Image (cartoon, rainbow, N blue to C red; front, side):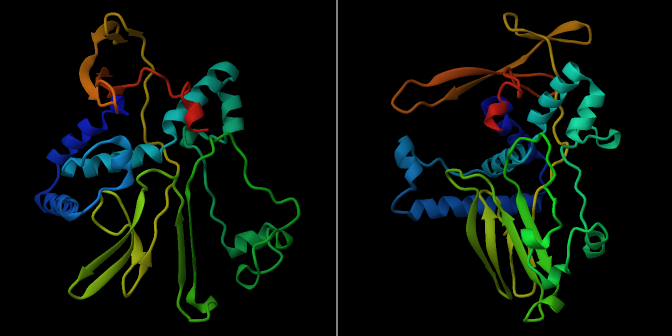
Length: 293
């Protein structure tokens, strides 16, 4: 994780924030520190690791946001897999197996949303959606989910029902952002009270507003979609000289030293490398793909 340089880019992002945005982020950081200052006991993970609480800074919030972006991306793994398949079996085979079209060259999935008329026209339903349950007996025989070679991962589900189909006459919204379990968890219950409004829902660590929730008027939710959001470059490197080959010459890496604290042990110092493209990851995503699959 240190090699990704998330903390470096978090500090850089801080420089480009507007004044009013920084005031909100700083107020959040001050609130976290004020709560910890009056807390009688810290969470379990501090006891397990034998560490103390470091004052929360604005860049810590940015780091968590960057980490969430990275966690929700499959590009770093899929690009390595697709490149390997293309080299071994050709691009046409890749397009056939991975459902990749030219205009979405590295898009992991192409989603098609079917409305009620589409589903009836394709024979997917025997009855109208609002008058039946979506169970196997109501689906056309032979209906199967789309299958491709995307590594198994967590995503989200969202759906809404019009008020004319509900007993109350009001619409219903369901949002299920099922991320993987972590310590600390990604989500936490949150209540924001204003003079004329109260907002209730779920927030992300480090992010001030309610991400998924409701006020007295509306409810809202979010979900993630697989998009191309990471650029990767394969470089020839010379580990001994700490250089990489670019533009017909050997260019020195930008080297940064990082110190990792070890419980009941000595601190470990490592070197992290960067290029003009961005951080350099010496172990390829293809080799590390077992972590995602």
